[in-house]
Amino acid sequence: MRSILRTSRTLDKDFLPQKGLQYTEFGPQEPPDAARKFEAGRQDPESSVGELLDAIREAAISWLAPMTEQELREKIVEIGSRLYAREYIVAGDGNLSVRLPGTNEILATPTGVCKGFLTPEMVVRVDLGGRKVDGTHDPSSELAMHLQIYRLRPDVGAVVHAHPPCGTGFAAAGLALDKAVISEVVLTLGCIPIAAYGTPSTQELADSIAPYVPSFDALLLANHGALTYGPSLESAYFRMETLEHFARISLVARLLGGEQPLDPRAVQKLFAIRERTGAASPTTALCAGSSDRISASTSAGTDGDERITLRRGDLVQLIADSVELAARLLEGAVRGEKR
Ligand SMILES: [Zn+2]
Image (cartoon, rainbow, N blue to C red; front, side):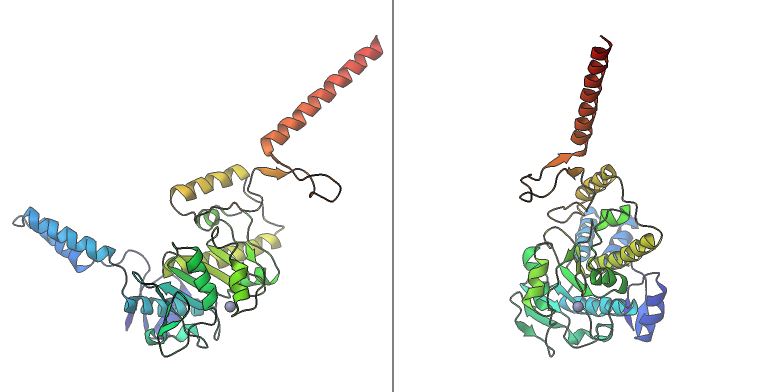
């Protein structure tokens, strides 16, 4: 049985064994042999400082070593199973890809195959121009969308595309998940905009996401599905989980009368934490309604008025000044009447 990291989710627990995959836990992994050797050496009074330093070096190298191509192929199989178990994809839906460390190539899922039933050999190796380098299958028909992300975001190591029912429901309704409502989501994803509809498997779809990719780590695709990416396959997958979870929470909140957005100052603080912890994507974009800038007039050109923006504090001060001025004028008028 292939060893698969475990979450505490019932779906995985039931589904993975059916596929011959062992159910183990996501989280701290077993220390590598080198780390165990170091710990044994540390407790042995006979071991020299030199031996300990060698053990430390060996342990560090094994911890930091990038995953091999075979390990990444197996990870794609595992994440495909998880997406399928959660019904984020059905039949031949969805696709995954990951950069091969130290190369200009990526591994991508094959087209026309259920991603819940992949094997490592089915994964296709392509270059960043989309040309197949190795594989018996053809790569995903959505490869152009993946390549667009790798081109625009050198920090991204993996991409996940799926059709999770609730997130895709928002995409079908033309609704972005861009309200700052849940602090954890603001911290991990910021907000989730919706990219204009583009025909699947065409450059049109790849072009539709381009304006959003530099600033966001998760997108809805209008009338289609969802897209997440991150430094690793696991991070891209977990962002898909967060997107779908947030879509479900948003739906419930709307059934209960609508979301109550976080205070703009609270959102600014969350974004400051995001930037400090390195969770922000290269250009941090604020969520709708979270900025303390308020639109103060209508669009330019319709009736000669130009559009301006004011800070909330400036607007409050302006209103306070106006009220004070009006009060003085009124007071002066009353005194004048009395005279
Ligand atoms: Zn799709």
